[in-house]
Length: 123
Image (tube, rainbow, N blue to C red; front, top):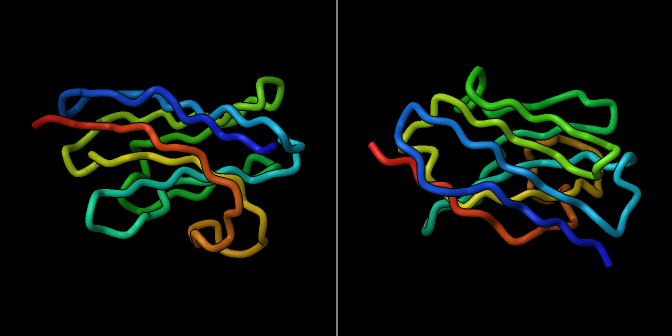
């Protein structure tokens, strides 16, 4: 049974930092790329960052230079360090395991999803 559990969300002031964690179980973690996505109510889910099994990374332009994705294979966990947070970063953040090759930002390439964690950035 594949499970992805995101944690670390919360309320932070603009300019602050948060670190999200995504703990994965039920699959061979080392073999999977893991992505972070976010969604605001009424809008479509969008890719934030992705890290593949070789630790190559992808970032959406809106978070480049502010967010850092990393993985710890010994802990089956992917992290998203979010610095210099802006109110427009407010969303529910989801992590997902990629099950199809292709563009890392395509939601359709991710087959396993966990419940999200709320991030709220106040101005």
